[in-house]
Amino acid sequence: MKIVVFGAGNIGRSLIGYIFSRAGYEVVFVDLIDEVVKALNERRRYEVVVRDVYSEVICVENVRAVHAKDLEKVSDEIASADVIATAVGTSNLPGVYETVAKGLIKRHSSGKGPIDILICENIRNASKLFREGLLKFLPKDYPFDSMVGLVETCIGKMVPLIPEEQRRKDILMVVAEAYDKIIVDAKAFKCGVPNVEGIIPKENITAYVDQKLFVHNMGHAVTAYLGYITDPRMRYIWEAISNPHVNKAVIKAMWESGEALIREYPDEFNRENMGEYIEDLIRRFSNRALGDTIYRVGRDLPRKLSRDDRLIGALLLEAKHSIPFFYTSLGVAAAILFRGKDENGKLYPSDEFFIREIYPRGVDYILEKICGLNAKKEKSIIDSIKKIYEIIVREPGEWYTIIDRM
Image (cartoon, rainbow, N blue to C red; front, side, top):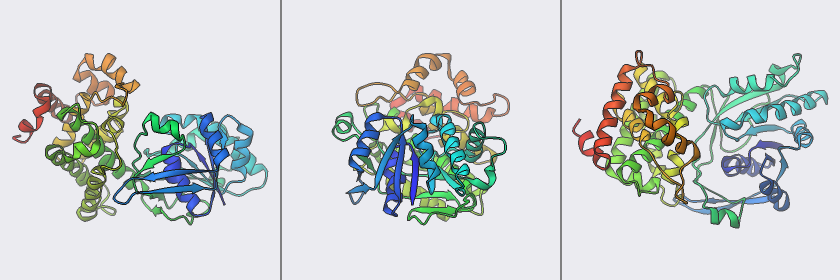
C-alpha cells in the first residue's frame, strides 16, 4: 500500500506520514524544498519528537520523496498510489491541482481504479474548492465522480515552530504534541475508509470542521491575543493560558461558540461532549513541554481576522443563534492590537503589512475591509468589538479589571 502526500511539512510529517507509515504504507512525499526531498531520499526515515505528558521520539520509516517540479514522476506515483493526501496550506492548493490532475489522467488511461484524496487543510467546503480546481485541468469527459473521492478532514494536531538552530541540525525532525487523529468524511470515500489507526470517520464532517475552526482555532488564537496584550513579553501559549484572567476569558469565548455549535448541529454536539472537548483543549494549550509560541498561534492577522475564519466566523455563528458574543468580541479586539514577533524579533510579513497599511486606517476600516462585516446588517457585532477595543486601547495591560466588571 502506498500513500502520496503533497507537503512534507509539519502536519505531513508529524501526522499523515506517521500514522500511515505505522499502518504499513509506503509514504511518498511531494515537496518543493530541495533539501527536504534530498534528505528524505537519503535517509528514508525521520524523527517525530513528541512533547506531552509522556514524551518520546518516534522514528517514521518507509518514506521517500519526489520533487514537486518533477511532474512526470509525481504523476507516475499518483497512478500507482492507493490513497493521496494534501497538507500544503490553503494558499498553496492552486499549485497542486494541475499535478494531481495529470496523475489522475495517467491513472485512468492505464486502467487503474478510483482513488481517494484526503484534503488535510482545515477549510470549510474543501471538497467543492478542490473539485473546482481539479476540473480546470481534466478533460471534459473524465469520469470524475466515479474515479475521485474528495475527502474533507479535520486536523487538530498542534505542531510548534522549530528554532532555526534546531532546524539546521536536522531538517526532517519535527516536534509535536501526542495527538494522532484525523477526522474524515465517512461518506466521501470511493475506496472505503483506510484501515489506519487514528482515522476517525464521521457522517457530518462539516460539524467537526466548524468545531475545529470555531472552538479549537478560535480559542487558541484568543489565548495568543489576550496573552500578548496582557504582557507583550510573554512568549508561550502555556504562559498565556496559565494567567487566570486569560484562562477565564478563553473558556468563556470557547463556550460562546460551543453553545452556537450545539444549536447548529444538535445531532452531533451537546453540553457534555462539548465540555469534554473544551476541557481537553485547555489541557493541551497548557502543555509546557510543547513550547508552542504566542507568535505562531497569533500570526497572520489578515487571514485570521477574515470573515470566514476562526474569529469572525465564530461571531457570525453565535449571532445567528442569539448567543451572547462578548468574549469572542474581546478576542477580535485583542487581535487588532496583536504585534507578536518571532525568535529574531521580526513580525510575520502579513502582520507587518497589517500594522503599516491597514491599522492606521482605523478600526472601522479593519472591521469592514478585513473582517468583512456589514455596517448595517452586523451592527451589533461591530459595536461590541469597538466598545471592547476602546477599553483595551486605554488599559492594554489591565483590560481584565474593566472587562470583569462588565
